[in-house]
Image 1: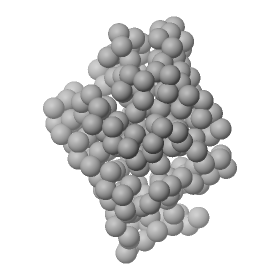
Image 2: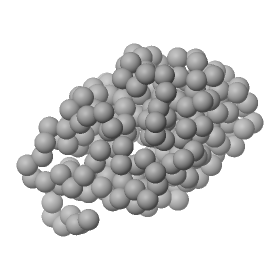
Image 3: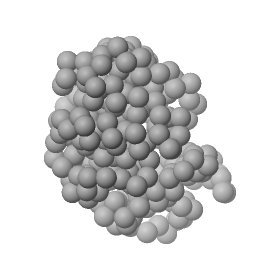
Length: 233
């Protein structure tokens, strides 16, 4: 896969990072579901890719605001992010499940995520046929308090990759209302993010941990993990 030159536009650089991440993960089953291809770095992009790039850029803006403690401004930006991911999903077609993960994660971080969870449920139904789709559904079920289905969806994530396995551990623990298992799982997620030298939006933040911690807080189960990659640390 061709690499971008350093002088390309910042949005194209973020798109290149997305391509590299997906390329590496492509060895794992189901990652092609993100629907990302070489068109992401084209100067004449299809609408689905333009929307995805805008979502990533705006998501990075929102994460910077979160890390700076600007919750209200971050929530506003995240609502825009969710809408961009939704529009990108609708343009991209039925296998671009990573965009639905973006929808529900943005919703959780912007508010309670209930509207976004309902949207994901309507789009995917009750069952998923890939690890990435299972992740989107597992988050949606958790937000809606459907622990049994969240647990089943988390099991479907385990054919994907190690990061998906760690996230599945956290989701299953939340579904089981097991605080000790959840705390261990979210710490493993944070440790993984801390070891990375690249982040999808260009902003070093443990966004997966942040999302599950928001859900955990609603259940009185937040682990309170401290990290430079989390707000308030």
